[in-house]
Image (cartoon, rainbow, N blue to C red; front, side):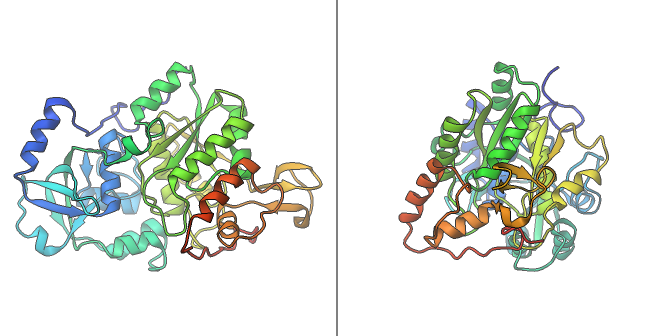
Length: 405
């Protein structure tokens, strides 16, 4: 056996990040090009393109790709792809740009030139249509919808030459790993089947249970942290990394899991985003993606297992990676351990429902954390973090965070 292939027809990674003399020449040339300021999400997508995580994409999508991805979950050439990867700007900034012209892309927060885009097409989109198709809503309270509706009126399409990975390599040494690096690591460990655990919260007991189920049925588990920008009130990646390290050190058999991070900015797209997570985890070398309750969801926009059922709606050959679907997990006092709706016959009153949202709300308000909710080593790190915050963001509970239906 061997690792799953990268996504796409030619089954090879296609990183867009330059290096060596080619990079030096491109940076010199970029200094003389017209500049376009891009959003944090677009910067995140650029880096994902750069490291090959968005293989087989070579740049930002044109109109044909955008339309077919929105409506059919496929690129114009028929390759499976679930969410548009686009770059937008205002009409004024787009007007002087010509097809075939190169433009330097500058991160709006750091001012760093991140890439050079060769403009192949300029086009307008129906942003509400994209939101309805991708997010299943046009409600501006959804952060993904708000992002799309606030973007510029004109999309720019074309291949990119990526010049920088931002601050990720320096900020997360040993955690920030590119797909070629995770694949090499898995091969060194002689792992052929690898399950990815998506994390944007610190690992609580339910996450731990999901990971240990995956350890039982695969060669190893990739605990994959989201390093990109999250919504207000989420816990920073540096804190989550420390918490995961403590949990793995004390509660996992050595060499059954590795922790890494990905420079993705969450769209909170629920089912569609779960498919995107599956695509790029396959590029990282994972054969399975753990899909638990409310994967990549936000608020009450999605049902607790919508992200599982969407894998049954796509063609069987869309991905080599397969979902590892796991039911609602919790601590049951009568079972005296972690259980799920498939394994525990007892009443809800016996269960400690565990969710990242509920844990963040409890800690941010200084409340007591129920027994069996999280490991003491993890709680100590999280309490230390919350003690340093002067202005706390209110964490709102959705109905699934407390076990509601």
